[in-house]
Length: 66
Image (cartoon, rainbow, N blue to C red; front, side):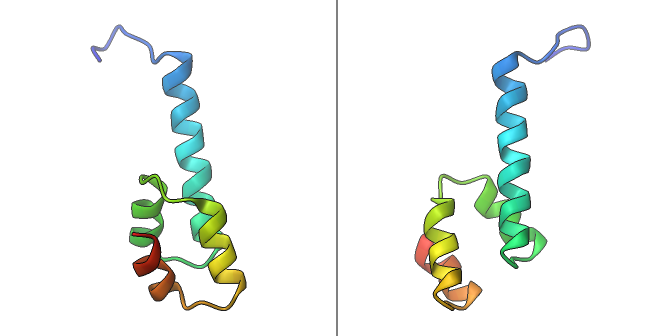
């Protein structure tokens, strides 16, 4: 994208979703790098929430979903 182009509404929405997912993984207790990796993937956030709620250690949850 050049300096004169503006992001499309789809690009803006995708960015908002990515930031929201990052925030959700951080709130679940993942570190910055892990949360960033999870947020940028197609990992099911609901599945990760379920694993964490079932007392699955975060490192194990990370291994399961990635």
